[in-house]
Length: 418
Image 1 (cartoon, rainbow, N blue to C red):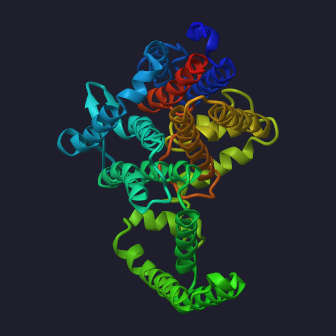
Image 2 (image 1 turned 180 degrees about the horizontal axis):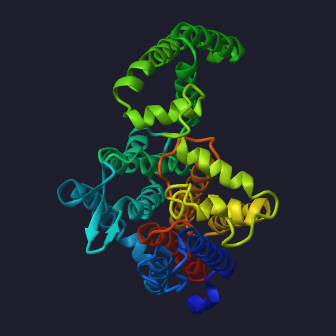
Image 3 (image 1 turned 120 degrees about the vertical axis):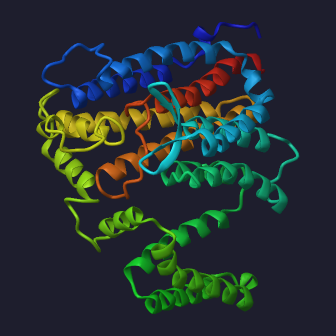
């Protein structure tokens, strides 16, 4: 088929949704950061002025990403992934420490967070590995390699430490599952989370008893040919051991602020003036917005600076307070539309590599959306995850843009892959 320009082949529906989200983000950053004596939108002393600069560089970044041949991303995936890992390692030598985390490089007045850009590199690396026709995730060695690609950056990020970013990478296991990773990996993960929460809420003996009952029920409901007393016994011992160890891990491995956030989430601790302050104030702000909100620039919680970091991780509180349920629903629907569009495009790719990369993009964005909004409304611990395209920051905006537009470049190129 004859080559056509990227401008004709790019999915403009996705570009439109992306543009709307970036615009909504800037409008709410402006509101969250506006001070009485400054209404000049290019005021570089304010975050909304800086965000405009970031958006301007983003346009240049999009042009560069779309100008590069789509095959480049597949051909040089190993180099891209390797450079990303080196950038994470370099933090331990030249990184900048902020709030106890060594997650950034300081470049003059700017900071760059390499873990954000590593998400694209890891999604590319998984796509490259899984698109090999000889790879079969029923093979244990192939499973280890696939999980290794995922957990190498996770290990480096946890050492920073940055649990929020590490969580995003963990969720890319769904990409592996989509390509054949046995379901027991996912069920093991879900089971560990459930046992962890139960062990925090109940006494160990009760958790062990519930675990025993669950294993017995599973044994008798399994098909006779799959019943194995020894295997069931081993599973019970492992689950019981994990349950009993939770308390030790929670008290000796978790940091104090992590313990506080879990205790508040589970209702074991009330500290509205301390560790629970952010979440409490964000809930108040969103709740006060009602159905249609208080109006742009009219949010009293926003103007009173009651919610810390409102222009970054808590930007959704400004949406909820000033635009109400209606505005929040529109933002969530735009997110959902973007994700569904990415999945639709992924399913229609002509190459396995671009299809799998599309799943990686959807996985990263969905996890950010879900965790951030859940955190803001108080159903998930506060872990510092930005809301894609809305939260303030050059690293997050640029990294999400690269992640998305690499896929759009692949999609635009599929007309040449017949």
